[in-house]
Length: 260
Image (cartoon, rainbow, N blue to C red; front, side, top):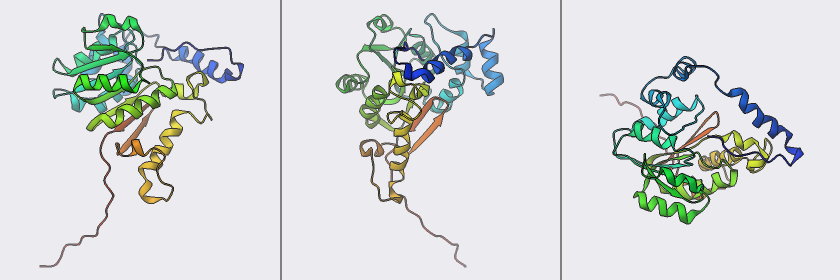
């Protein structure tokens, strides 16, 4: 969840200041979280119950994330899973995933905050380090025995998001999922973004879409190290999902039933 403190020294970022301030207007003020999610998103099920019931550790999520999570993560329930969450915060998200995925799932969380060590061994394993440190990420994946699903809920800083994606997407197993959330920060300069900023993560996504279609143009690939590892990109409000598969050269044919 969004948690970076805005640096207000740059007056050129007034649109960003307004955008961050606007987050408060989205805060749920009702009494029934469960009913709000059910009524507005027509969503129900185990994940909603787990979130709405809460746990000892605090978890903070946008309501529209719940059905998105379930859409992509439900196929991984009740089967072997190695799940890595970037960003531990107050520990509640790891607790939610443990209850959702079950006791057999290998669940790791990473965070740069030393205070997150307190959550190690409760709902999953916690390791302290930077999501932009490739060596650290490689060590964590090795300890996990590989990774099937990655959820980036870390710093939400553009360069960090890109560094984690570069390091981890190639290591996700075929059929796995790489999800990045809270991408509203892509529009805020203090996180390295901006509506027209070159480093806005959605600009990279646009070029990755071009890379995915490189068969049909002559401009090559801008991110060949990533293009070899995904076959689809899904964009939701503040969320990007990449489905991990090795792309196959597209082939077409014509078929017609022959007369007996």
